[in-house]
Length: 93
Image (cartoon, rainbow, N blue to C red):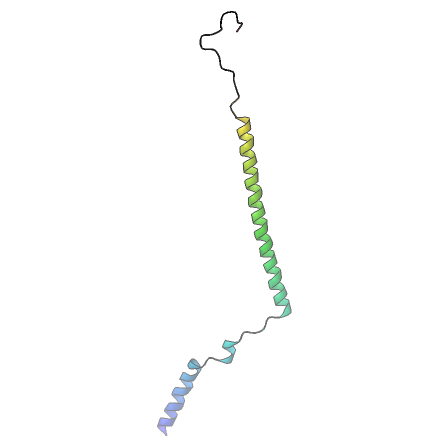
C-alpha cells in the first residue's frame, strides 16, 4: 500500500514535467485587429527603410555635386607659356 502511494506521488510530480501541457504547445490565434496592426507596422518599417535609402542617395548626390563644383572652381586655368628669354626681337611683350 505504501509502495502504491509512493508511486502515485512520484508520478504526479514527474508526469507534468515529461508530458508538455496543452496550453504550452498551442499559441492563441491572432485577432484580425492584431494582424492588421502587424501589417501596418511592417509597412511603416519598410517605408522608413526606403526613406533612409533615399536620404543616403540624396546625400551622396549632393556630395558629388559639391565635389564637381569645387573642382570647377579651383581647376587650374590654362596660361600661355612665357618665352624663356623674354620677348623675341621685334615683338612687344
